[in-house]
Image (cartoon, rainbow, N blue to C red; front, side, top):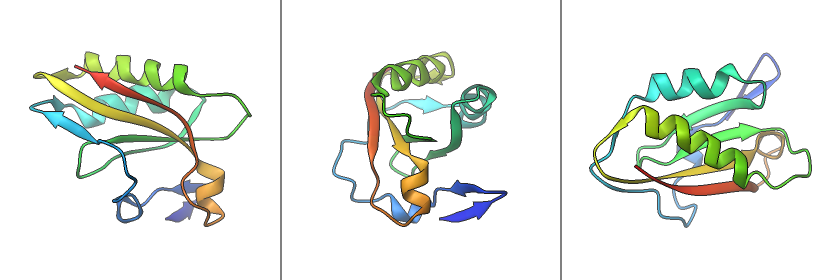
Length: 113
C-alpha cells in the first residue's frame, strides 16, 4: 500500500488469501467504467480489481454496516459486465489499511451478473 495525497492506495499484492470466493464463471467487466462510476461519489476513497476478479472499494469507517453500499457497487458492476457468474464486492476500511492493520471488512456482496 502507498499513500497518495493522504489517501491510501490498496496494493493488489496485499489481497491474496483473504479467504473469500473472489469470482466465478465467465464474467467480463469494464473495470475503468466501474471505477469511474464508483469513484464519482464521495464515499469511495480507493478502488481495486484483483487478479482473481474481486472488487475492493476502500471507504472511511463511519460505524455503519456497508453491505448496502456493496450492493450499490454491484449495480455498477452489472451495468458494465457481460457473461454470467459472480464477482465479490468487498468494502474495506481504508484507514485501517493505511495504519498497517489487517483488512477490516465493512460490507460485502456476492454480485451475480
